[in-house]
Length: 245
Image (cartoon, rainbow, N blue to C red; front, side, top):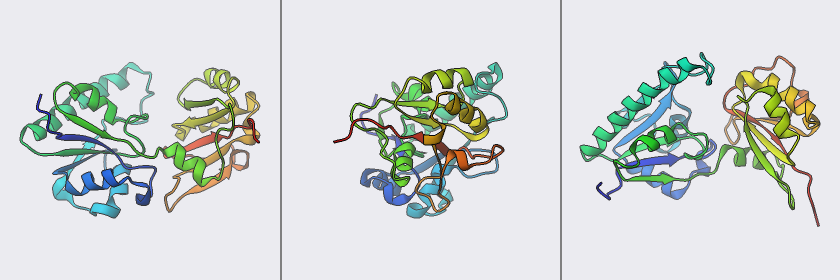
């Protein structure tokens, strides 16, 4: 394997370009190819974050269009059956780009190694090409900072949960923690709300949507209506109440 870095997993931070690292910006400006995941007919969230630095430069752009997103539950066999060949084909495409001598940056909202699609490419390519993963401010860090809600105090234990878990499992884990972040809301928000109520945490829960972005919304979760439609780019934080001096 050639040690020259040709492939980057590029963390772009929680949304506002000012939260991008110097390293990420440098790679973004110089890479030969800018790769982003997206839904069919839409631009990827990470590509939108990059606009402030590189603009709508389509000459360098490679869009990886998901065959499915939320149409099929993630635990359904058809989901893996659709995504596996997609990631295999994407990995082969990016490997061909690097073998042609081009540098490729896969744009990632938040941190590439935190619930990121890039990890599926990294796993397939890590032994075939030199990869640099550029870490970033995570979405949850941006959320609790913008909400003015320190997430852990003293010996507080923080639990990070995907909203895709069952209601019973969410309730169980939330009942055993001091502070929490629940990711992947979307259609899971009603279930997450019920689990938080069961765990006695609903009154402390804060809903954060598009943290650090111009469309940012921060509101106590109990104030949202039961039928509120949460986008994927949202999460719930439950600040801890631990030891203070």
